[in-house]
Length: 467
Image (cartoon, rainbow, N blue to C red; front, side):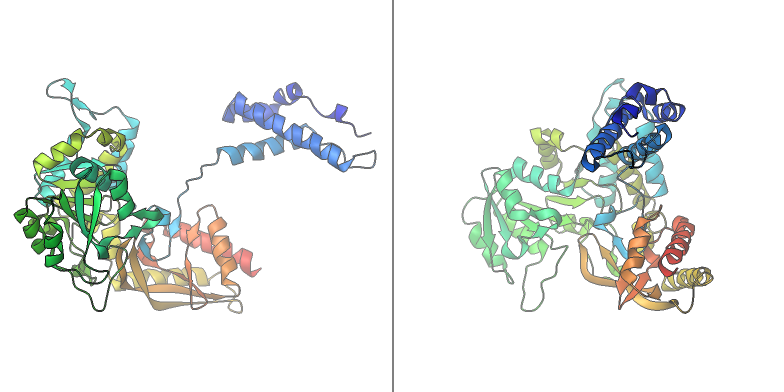
């Protein structure tokens, strides 16, 4: 007869060999919690279903152990997992933006594995500063007098404003009061910093005289926020950065440029619109430039401030600087990434630049190879494969509407949404897209080391979807 008195006790379960094996792999406290939860669920189910002599038998030790194992697997499975980006978006914000170079990966791994001289001066044998590790590289690359690295560019902008413009006026064009991903709005950041926002010009047109009129009253700085994730077209006008910087200095105020993406290479060389470069901003007269480390720099998430030494020194001393400082993993990965630029090897070593600069013929050859390998397992009556021309995008809030010519592996299949779902559910999830009712895969953004995983994932998904 079914009775809860026949249910194994906690002690009985913990002494069972299968549960003991789970304890070895997951620890006793966590396994004990899982055992108790499974038993509670069985008891609750017993009362809800009103079990009797005709009901199925209560689970035995092995069945309970299997439920405990599944529960533990769910609890301990990482929520961050590698994926294959076949979407054609180089800087895919939802997929972690820039993948790191091999050297940057190794630097991060070493920094996490070993002790290191993060804040220790090896020459003097005394405490040093973590703020020095990327400074010299940034100075050499950009020509800036000094630099400081924080945890992201939003922090860089906030810290700059709090240090230099708290309770003081900051002049900015209305066309630059932007919102980027995650609800980050320039006006709200200024408000949080304590700066007093002074808007000039109109949404579509601003002139030097608008800035000059605003400077008739004392101000701390003029700020430019580069519209990296949208483009204003039509009847528009905006002064050159050099004109604004010259005016700012005439009135004794600072010029701060928030570049966002922070290109260190000329994007126009790859058929894209020219993205303002950090070096150009400094040469045009900016006193400080803020930009991201994980966008067009191609490194880990970071906020970078470069510019005049006296201003950077003030920023480093601000109390907020400690709260938003970069950690050792970030500094290690960023330094390795910047070294690629210094050695003139960014196009071959930094993944995002390798993708951006990839030749169309190389992309086409990869797509054709995939097509040949996958067609072997396709039922022609259910799946049609072809290689077609397409477009990749840079993404990550950079170069809006700019596209790179590419070739796509296109799959015509019934219920393409179901195919995408199957690809996301695999052991190595694949992120693709639907275009003109076809599932398409862009080789530009697929790491060559993941190609075999991609083919395996496609084979497995096709077997499930077309059976």
